[in-house]
Length: 245
Image (cartoon, rainbow, N blue to C red; front, top):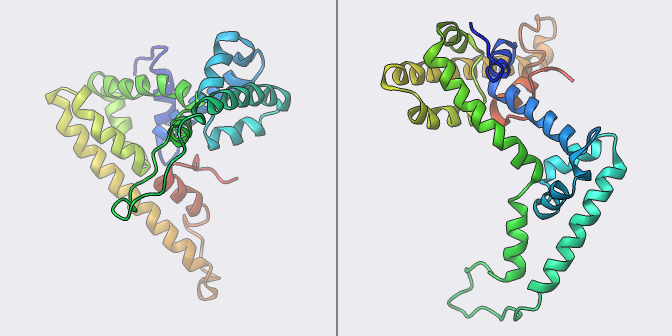
C-alpha cells in the first residue's frame, strides 16, 4: 500500500489490533490536541489562541484530561481568563429583564432568557473539540480516498474488527458523499457486515465474561472473555481503546 504523509495515521489505525480504528484515529488526535493546548510550548501562551480558548472554554471530558496533564499552573491560567470573560459577559446579559411566571397555558415551555441562552451556547463549545474536529473530518475523507484507490486498504478495511456504533453511523452517513458509484455499495455492504459480525463477537465475549463470574463456570477457560468489558465499552460508547488498564 502506498504511503503518503496524510494517509499514514489512517493506515496505522487500521493496522492496529483494536475494536474501532476510527476511535484510535480520534484518540491520537485527542492526545495531540491536549498536548497542543497545555503541553511544552503550549498554545495558551499565544495571545490569539488564548483569546479563542477563553471564548470557547472546554467540555467536561477535556477539562478532566487537561487537569490530568502535568501542568496545573497552565490550566489555572486558562481557567482564570476564561472565568474573567464569563463574568464580564454574564454581567451584561443579566441586565435583561427577569423572567416572569409562565401562564397556565405555557407551563411546559422551556425558559428562554439571555442568561440561559449564553450558558447553553457555551456548553456546546470546546477549544479542544474544535481543534480535533478540524483534522478528524479530513481523516474521515482520507478513509474513503484510500478505499477508492488502494486494493490493500479495501482488504484491510474488510479485515478490521469492526467499529464502535457511533463511528459506524458516521461512516455510513458520509460514504455516499465521498465514494463514487463503483465502490459505494461494496463499502456499505462490507461496513454493515463488519460492524454486525464484530458487534456480535464482542457481545458473545461479554456473555462469557458474565458466565465466568458464576461459580458454576469457575473451572472453565476464559476464552476471549477476560477483557470483554473494556472492548464492549469501545463498541457501545467509544470510550475505551480496547486495551486493559
